[in-house]
Structures are given as C-alpha cells and as structure tokens.
Image (cartoon, rainbow, N blue to C red):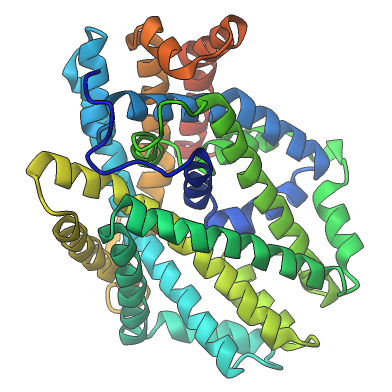
Length: 452
C-alpha cells in the first residue's frame, strides 16, 4: 500500500487508540447487561466461558478489522476494496464496509434517544426529584418521560449535538482530546462507585451473584449468550474498529493492543457489576435486566441511601460518558467516508450526517408516543432498528470480515501487519477461516430463531 498515513490523521500513541477503542466498546449495555447475564448464567463459570469466547472469536476478528484499516489507511469501504484489490480479490468486498457503516448510523439513531434518557436522569438526580421516591412512582416517572415527545426531542437533540461536536473537531482535536478526558473520568467514576458499593452491606451478595461458580446454571444457552456478547461488546462488524485502526501507527503491535482493549472492556463490565448489584441487593431489590434496572430500580435505591443523591449523580454521569464515547465511534466511519470520497470538509460531513441521524432518532423516540402505532414486522421503529442491527447486520458483517481476512487477504499482507509468531499466526488464521465465522453464524441463526 502506497498510502502510509490516513488523511484524517493518526493517534498520538498506542494507548490513545486503546482508550478510544475501549470507549467505543464500553457502552450502556456493557454496564448493565454483562453483569446481569453473568449472574444469571453461573457467575464465575460463565465468566470463564465468556473469556474463552473473547479470545477465540472477539479478539481474532478485532485484529482483522484493525489490520485491514491500518493497511489501507482509509475508511472501511475503501479499506476493504483496496485490500481486496491488493490481494487480487474482487472489489465487491467493500459492501461489508457499506453494511457496517449503515449499521452504525442506524444504531446511533436509537442510541441517541437512550443517551437522552441518561442526560434527563442526570438532571433529575441533580435536582433531587428522585430522592425518597417509591418503585411505583419511579416506574410512572419513566413511563411519563417516554410519553413526552418534546422532552425526549430536547435531550435527543442535545446528545446528538454533543456527539457531532466531537466528531467534527477531527481525530486529534476531537476524538483524541475527548478520549484523554472522558476515559480516565470513566475509570475514576467507576472505582468511586465501587468504593461506595462496598459500604452498602450488599457487597458480598453482589460478589456471590456475579462470581460464584454455579455450573448447574451453565447451559448450552449460556454458552450462546457468552458467545454473542463477546462479539457485540467489542464493537465488531460496524466499521468502527476498522476506521480507528486506520489511524494507528505502523510500529504499534496489533495483537498486544487488541488484547489490552479486550481486557479493559471486560474489567469495566465486571467492576460495573460489583458497583451496581450491591446497591440493588442492599435495598432488597430484584436485579432485573434492561432499562428497568438503570432508570427505575437504581434511582429508587440511590434515593433511599446515605449520600445517595451525590452517588446517583456520579452514576448517571458515568453512564453518560460511556454512552457518549460509544456514540462518537458510531459516526466516525461514515464521516471519514464522506471526507475521503466526496472531499467534504470534516465539519460539514459531521453536521450533514448529524442531521440525518437526528431525523432518524425522531422516528425512534416517536415509537413511545406519537408513532407508537407505526410498526415493522410487529415491532415499533426503535425495536425494529435495534433488532435488524444487533441480530442481523452486525453478526453478518462479522462473518464476512472473518471470511475476508482468512480466505481473501494474502498471508504475506496479514503477516506483515500482525507481526505474530508463526504458531500464533496459524491459530489466528484458523480462527478466521473456520472458528470465528462458524461461531458467529451459530449466534446469527439463534438470534433470528431463538431457542424455546
């Protein structure tokens, strides 16, 4: 490849890339979903299965995305096209990049709505509106929020502007600067909340819920859950990691870097569980999954505890930072494409894309009120976009990336980028050709046809 640097710029260091990619991976679902599915599927036994899936499927696919992006130094569509052409393959492989970038845009449209919910909850925690509130009242307050399109529109708009502002500023002045501030802040907030959770009296129960080895709960479905989450938690299949990889310096080790990202992502998820569940258990609540845990149960718990308002504010700021860093990564691949393909100024590309996703977001927030009767295959707009991206587009993209890296890219090009010892490279190549695509295909099948 003649192009040695991306026209977008490059990361100042390997650790900035690690933090940026970890920021992309650590999102809303990472903080509430992983701890819950861990507790429900055997605790420590599930964690071992999950880590095996990360190593056998998630890490190898992420390595493939990074080296494809770095080799071409271009956006996902052009990177896949160029690497395919270099390996004497057909240019049509660029369609993987199109699908991935489209996934990111569609995900942002409803993710921004949820990000807006988080901003709203930061505000009401600051004003003390949740102090001493009952579960019934908290549930009613959340339902009332969903029924107010003007309020939702305001928060969705603010979250969209926050995200577009960072992306428009570029790699170094925007994403890198935000990463330097937000990721350390995220870790500090997380460990402050962990320390607080250790004083609640429910820490032992929370620890046991997550880490007690209960092999009786470890079923085939548990393994499927672990495999699915290991893929989705690393932001694979949407072009983000490929775009971020194109800004990575040539001398940085892809293998060590990706392992660090996987380790940090898992650490955040585990510490988040240890921070959340002691608070839930100490208040005698059920650790239910989904929005109910984050927007109903936890606000009630904080409202009933000493210093609960302060730590409630810190918690929702933590969630807001996680949502913001993930949202930034959803827009970056498409903005990079618009800049490179159509020679647009980055600020114009970011604003244009921001307007599009903001408009799609209005349809998503309308799913809970003025557009609640609009459905696609029995699902409202919000749930439909969530379903087709998470259950179809991302896993399909992951399968195609693995097949592309394993069967199309010439070994000499992959080896030149990965710089792995011969034995490790052989394992990685086998994973790309067989293990990863078969494993993700199994996830895809059961996402479309759930086990009964």
